[in-house]
Amino acid sequence: APILNATESAASWDQLQTLAVNVVMATYCVHRNAAFQLFNTHVPAPHRSRILENLCLLVLRKIPPTEPRSSLDDEFHRSNYNVALDILEILEHAPDDVTFARCLSYSCTVFGNRKNKENFTAQQRSDFRDRVSLLIAKKLPDQQNIKHDGYVIVSKAYLGRMVEYKQDEWRILVTVAESIPNVADRCFVYLEICACLPQKSQFDNLRKELLEKANATIEVMPSIHDRYSRLEMYVSTARKFDVAEATAALKRAARLSMSLGTDGDASSKRLSLIHI
Image (cartoon, rainbow, N blue to C red; front, side, top):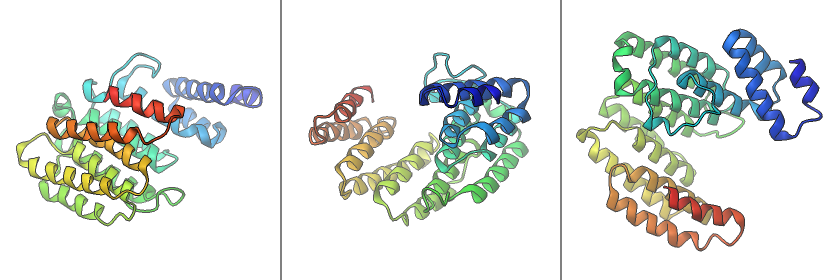
């Protein structure tokens, strides 16, 4: 705490955020309760999301966030129920809906890895589902941010990576998503559900249906920037299941990108297409 207090007025925004991340994570490694006390009382609100996400990744990967790493989808990190309990504590401290959903997504990606299947009993998976469901009901929707149920739905979809929902449970999420009033948000939720579906042929029809729903919402978005952003997301999701459809969408995104303007942000977005 004295370190954060002494540098708060002198350090730049980025320096203070980096310092806060390092201090909280170092404290967490030796005294978890002290770290959360420090987080709640001395870390400025704008820095809390980054700190909690980094703390979540530290618990899951067991290496500092500064170490080189790839996507969690491409990695394997051995986990067990003790790690899941640590994640539940982190989720309890999530300052907003985005941070809560991201930390849950990271965690369920690791816990749902087939190599971790034997590290959780059926009872432990059920208990984790029940406790996360209580946190979702308690923290979402976040009345300071997105007030509809978008993050409620995607958080339940992320949980499905670990607990293996039946098809009817997935379809309930899709049905609820249809009532989201904002088309860009609705598209985001459709694509997140699609990405979370099990890689089994019995879900192929639902996967195709979600891609079609997402594509239909992209077509009616009034904002060109929203359309481009969701097209990028659509390509990233579709390429895992339908290469031809992803290629067609990539071409649409490339054409649309030419209408974004010529500033640095537009150029950065066009460049990002190369890395999808």
